[in-house]
Length: 274
Image: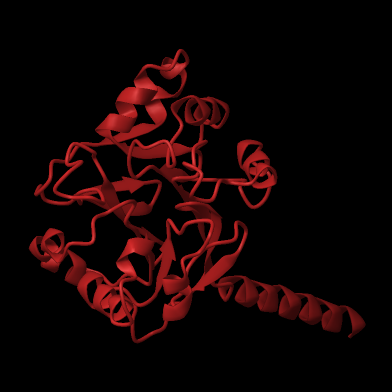
């Protein structure tokens, strides 16, 4: 009888553990500037995680976080994919990214053509070339789709902040779905609504559970609601916030990332899953 009770107890403990594991919410962790780690179940992706420049304005990835990332220490172990939004020094550093990929053969990198061309100039290029997935889009092109190890990514080119200037910069917006959880990262996308209206069906086709968008979108108290409606996003966290957080951002009481290491739960409820 005691043996039977012990077996039953073990089964209950294992079952409870499995339920607890399934109930762990997806999360986003801030690295610096627009760098974000997304975790859901046993999958992990990074956006714009490795860069060296901040123009004395934006937040760098702290040394202790960067060392963990480079050395695959938790929570940066078992990374599945890295998404680079565009070729700017506060988002991407070719030499450091190439070294990371060389040492982490399992990690796939998705990036616009301009980034891929920079990586192709690195002396160790042939060692990580198979890990690269190029996004080649012109402004106005239809979104493209990729499936990287059951991580479903969609990409669309939206002009960089400062439009109509700087149109040569290939800024890619990524919508990534990991086991039913969808996140959106805008990179340095321009705020003008005319860039987003042609893709109305694209936004409407899938709910974004959490979007990460540049702080320039936080214009007034209506901005976040407008962005949620336009992008079909349930929640928004602003990124690309100056180290000295503007008083306007504070006054608007919007959610934003400012301190490397801080986290957000990515909420998915039954009435907004799609």
